[in-house]
Length: 406
Image (cartoon, rainbow, N blue to C red):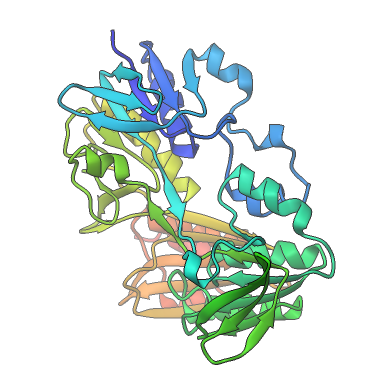
């Protein structure tokens, strides 16, 4: 019996393998990963792990013994070079060909890098995507050093927060007009700009990096398009990611912004499924791609069920989170296409929530240190209900009422 092969040993790959076993699949199951370590959680890399608050064993998605207990063969340090849907084989970079009965692509996404001509290859220019990246960066974060963060998304802001907590001088630059412009409303951007400013981060928005500068191959600073220069001992690049769809492209599977799947997580080949950051999937009349742990797990579990015969479409309420200093941001829903926002003050210091509307319909909520607002917002969205804007903006109104409103 040919195995089910899962290509990609991250959050989605492990969730898919675990769900197959939980649903009763007892055939051979192979998980292939490029990194030399067992699958681990990525979000803590830029937070607790790099701060030394989370050891490697607690970073692992599953303990080492789980793979043997569940009869999941795990091939590490292994790259799939080619996929042949007609022959139902994958070719590994060592020349080995493996047959499969069904295949799942959970290849994730890779960070964008700065090109070499503008200094992307200088020593001291780093990123935070893998365990190796975090291990390389952690010992360099020394008090008094000057750090330049390139990119004002969540990764960049989390890196800035960790660096300030470790005593570095931090400057963050963002080429868009405001930080978080792609992923959040101005109200949320304003909150985090003020938070980082209070902690001593210098944020420069609407500025373009012209080039990084160095001496003898090592970073010394950055020149911006407006002519100003920023001194820097280190730079962390957080300018976004691209879905890993190379295997799918070479196998002539349909792709756009990611690997195209249907509501059952099936690609254009009926025996190949995909889940996680690499996928483009149909959702409520549009096609989207989500970069989040929540989606990686939930979509992977749905893909596993569909591999075993499930026919329902995947219909998530997206959720995300970010930790910066002592603030936890929790997001429910998908804000794309919103037309209006309202601000709801929280009941304790630094707590508030931003509610997104398309017309009169609630589509998302950002909750800063306000787990209650997040929880209610997520449940309302899951129930396909809404909350009137005036009620959302009034802290005296109990939002729980709308959980059961008709």
